[in-house]
Length: 252
Image 1 (cartoon, helix red, strand yellow):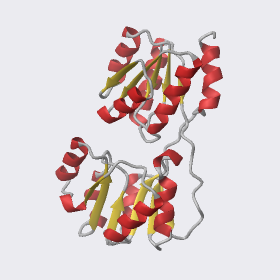
Image 2 (spheres, one colour; image 1 turned 135 degrees about the horizontal axis):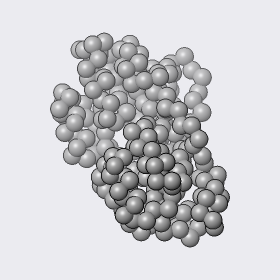
Image 3 (cartoon, helix red, strand yellow; image 1 turned 180 degrees about the vertical axis):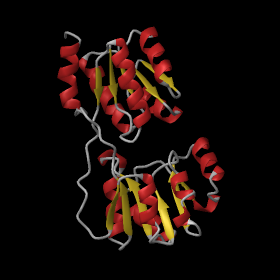
């Protein structure tokens, strides 16, 4: 059985391809939503909830996992690191799936940030900042001195945990857009107009994350866009590269 570390729409494609190739597939996702997507994609077994390195090792041993395909979000560096170490310790093949990247346009209004902290500094040029970076690093913006007095509008998943995190960090309900993406170009434009946005902040999450639509809709309205670059993913592979290497590793 192959374990797919899931949680994104890409994971569904990975699971479907592995199933079509003849593998039995288990999937693990942090959220119930991600687990639901994995189940819909045809995973034979689904685990919902976070897994640390020790929990992951136990899961791999107990379920007879033969290899791991890591299809988590490009910014999910903690689980990626834990998975690499768990597979190394158990001698299991590990493959990091590389989400297709977006070719960012060359535009004076597009600003690149190496971290969420730098993104907060760059976003301070506006008064109304539209955040599409999720809740995991939201405190980098709510607690940034340079953003004190600015209006932060946050687009998050429509999950109780996301809404609770926003409220914990002082985001008012009127500034929370609970919406499952990716959003179309037209919807992004409408949201920016509705909230009178000056700056949009997004992550370089790849084509599946709707980044192109977010960026183009903002630039076409002469808004500034801050993009947090994705962390390095050494050794990451496309799905087309993973399938034959997986078969080779498992003697198929």
